Picture 1 (spheres, rainbow, N blue to C red):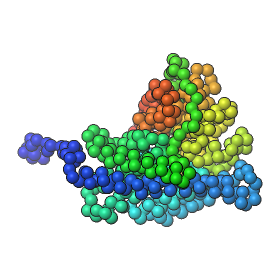
Picture 2: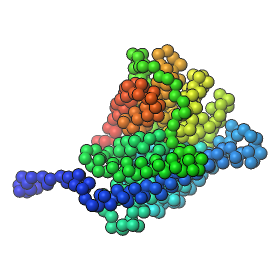
Picture 3: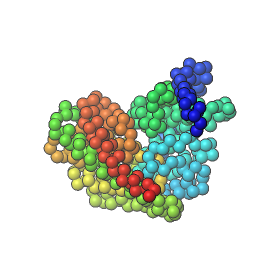
Picture 4: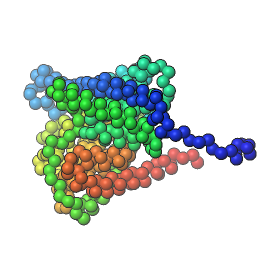
Length: 444
């Protein structure tokens, strides 16, 4: 480096707000608003298809085969084996490897290409529609972003990379607009996952919020018109939560520690299994599917409850878990935790989907199990467990707090201090647990 270059003043950083004042930014907002309608409709159709496949494969198909009105507890075993085969074939033979690996969390890998979209959709449908323990949010984020970029490149082939990235983010916002219960939660999720900050956050966030708002309206309209609902995370009934006491803050710390340990264990197991799965993709994915089915069978046979409590993402089961918490013994909840956590790790390692809803369900079940002990009411345990386990799996503290509190409505305000304590404890511990692993891979 020359002396002249060393002494030269740094070039001024571009003013992000100058972007907002340009005509191109206004055009971008109009394009985002227009694209939000079809992308939200496509996301609604994807979720409707997933739900129809779940009903078809778990209820209608065994009944059509003459297996009785009640689905046999062994049925998930062959069903998940078929899921493993179909998912593995989509990952191996279609472009894009079925989307991102859920065991690695939310990674900002950019919008998929048009050629990759069918593989992502088919791998997700084969996984989610047949009972794998994952949620639909990650495929929706990828599909929404990919569809948005493909559409805008058809309309404006020379669009700049920066504008293309904002369009992709807006498409993802529209696709998950109501899935997590509120457009704001989806916005915080994508914001934290992307790592945007400062003034650039506002520049990128405005198109996304616009797309999310339009997406919410489309979801509500289609849900009312079709009678299928909005597929939004919601609890029909939330029991009253008393004002937090000192004992409950102690439970929040304990739940934060427990969630950090459990989340770290699930994630490490999933990543270790993922290495084995990728060595023999088809056979290993089938084995992981059979493992999930066997775990569901074990839970059903041991407790007399439905195997579906272990299967699927847990999004639809959260309301029943809280409302019917008195009907679960501590032993049942503990067995549900073990079976669901192991099925979650197996699903993360080999299938395609999102990690959010199973982590919420595990945290909720753990909090309800501890609420059988003195000093912790079920609603507080439910919320604190969700926040602590979500941050342990996602590493997104703000999103985890919002997921655990906005879900509870007015009661969420009451329990928010407990949730924040648990989330902070879990987050700090998880980061500390990751340091030795990172240090061990450093060059010597």
